[in-house]
Length: 163
Image (cartoon, rainbow, N blue to C red):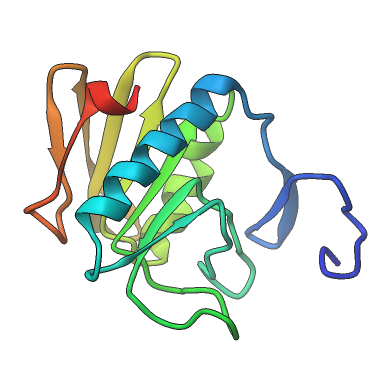
């Protein structure tokens, strides 16, 4: 339906078979994405692809558009990636969806590491350890601390550089 133009000029994504309007973006949201993109592209050059607000084939009935997805290097001209090393959502007004529906969806899809950059509370929440389709571990990181990527332990992102 999106390809046919039924949602022209609307930001929507498919979650569990339901077309959902995406939250409006503000300057703090966009700035955090820009900073993450800059740091991840540089740190992961040649190791992975960093995609910004592009579709992720989570399941047959779900195609979210995460703010940042670190995916295997591949040619995605024919289909969206269905595997990710890391997915990041930048959240303010979308905290409930990102910490609930999307966290469950990404865990069920086998995304082993999921971050929520919580611009409202000034922290990065790192979700990991999938148990029966949900994340069993959630760790908050505040300014002054850094987060290492599980799949790329040589890559460290300072929380203060993102928020």
